Every structure is written in structure tokens, then in C-alpha cells.
Image (tube, rainbow over all chains, first blue to last red; front, side, top):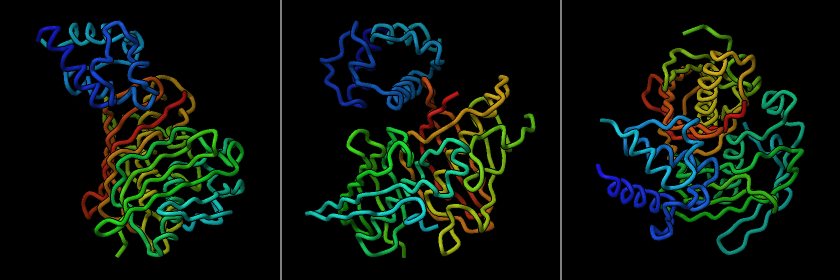
Length: 81
Length: 123
Length: 139
């Protein structure tokens, strides 16, 4: 799975779930602010990513994910072989 | 299990086209606070839901059964101390065997509950 | 699975204790049991457990699971837990006084101070209710 495929899929998933225009998702933008996530909706984001890519995002790692690029990098580097 | 006059009291009710507004007072000496939680009274979300059901039953005049809840968010923690009174606005839309309910519990500062779900006539 | 007193697992106390205990615990899944008694806080006039009672029971099942994991890590008191969100709750029937509820709670995701679980409650009569639920967990 290439990075472009990840970026495209993630943007589509998140814009639908959190009702945000895909164009509004900038790679270096802050995820929580862009999607206006509170603690309740943040866990939805974790659930979607974990289900879609069959990966686990421990809370400690989640804290490090600030921008969309961080999210794409995390998925790319944790994809099951 | 009647929560009215135990957990809450309806101090006012206004019905305008399609929307009902209940002015709710939370009763501080309700028994539930003995265990939820000892020394730290917090309104249980489940009691907010049961309170809403009782209020909707007064609107439709029939016993109801909470068949589904699409989404119910508790976005702030309520208690008789923090929030002695609040407004419960309820919109009921008749559906095949019951009513679709949208409701919000707020005291003007915070929103305590947003509810969307279907309550069926309890046959 | 260690046998831990219920008071250590959940912060709720009488009259609103809605779990008898943990039967099974795995990394992401737990099973609880609860017998509906006539003095239950959520019993309706017709001797049935109200839907809100099922919701509180599933929430406390999740809290017991979180409490167990906290105690295993050395916490001496269970974290206080509140229901943050109920999603796709579906209730098929209301259990009666005397029914024994068996509830499976599985953790779907966790974020800072919130867990998202799927809960399914059964009695001898089959699935009584299913729901997704987010529980705020404050250490």
C-alpha cells in the first residue's frame, strides 16, 4: 500500500465520519483542531484507523500524533506485513 | 422506579409547535447519590435517559419502551449542586409504532445530554 | 484471573450497584454477571429492569473491567467512570426480577481518558440488549 493510497483513504474516511471537506485536510494541519475532536470523538478516530488498517494505537503513541502527516507516517510504519 | 419527584421534579412545562420544554429541578436528596458516588454526587447518565423517557411519556400519554438509541452524548457532568435546574427540550416525531425523539438537556451554560433515538409504544 | 472484591473494581455503591462480579477477563474482553433483584434501583412497576438499567449495567461492566486492569497495575481504588456516550443501543426485551444477566464487554478503542466498548447482555432468553458505549475513565 503506497503512502498516496493511505493519504487518500484516510482523508476520505475522516471527512465522512467527522463531516469535514477533504480539501480542508492539510498534511501539516493539527488533526484534533481540523476535525474539531473532543475526547469522545477522538476515540472514534482511533477506532476507525484501527479497524481499517488492522493496527493498534496505544494511548502513548496517540499522544505523539498531532498532524495528519504524523497519522499517515504512523499508519505507514505500523502496517501489518 | 418512578424518577419523577425522586431524582427530578418538573417545575415548568411549555409546549410550542412540535417542541416541548420541561424545566427540570434535580433533587439533591435523591437516594441514588448515596452510591453514585459516596461523597461525590454525580447525576448518572442512565437516570437522565430514564427521566427523558418519563417526560416523553407525559407528552404521548402512553407507556414507552426505549427500543433503540442512535446516539446519546453526555458532554458535561451534572449534579444537583453544579446544576440545580436545567431545561430539557424534546422534539417528538410520530413514527410507525412509536416516536422518534430528539432531546437536549442544558442549563444555558453547558449541554449535559444530547439524545437521538426511537421510543416504541410499550404494548 | 484474580478474584478481587467488587468494591475494589467499581466506585458505585448501593443503591445503584448493577454488577455482581467479573467472570472472565482477557486483554480486550471481559464477562460480568448480575442477578436482577426486586430492590434494584431500575425495576419498573411491572417487575422488569428498565432499559436505562441495562445501560447502567453495561457501563458498570465496562468500569469493572477497567477497574480490574487498574488494580492489577497496583491502583488501590477503582477509577471513577461516567457514561460519555451511548451509541447504537438496541434493546430487545427487558429482563425480569430473578433473571441472571451475562454481559460481554469488548474494548474497541481507547483514547486519553475514554474507552469505547461494545457491550452485549444476555439472559436465558437470549440477547436482551447490545450497544456501543464510551466511558470516561478518570484515574
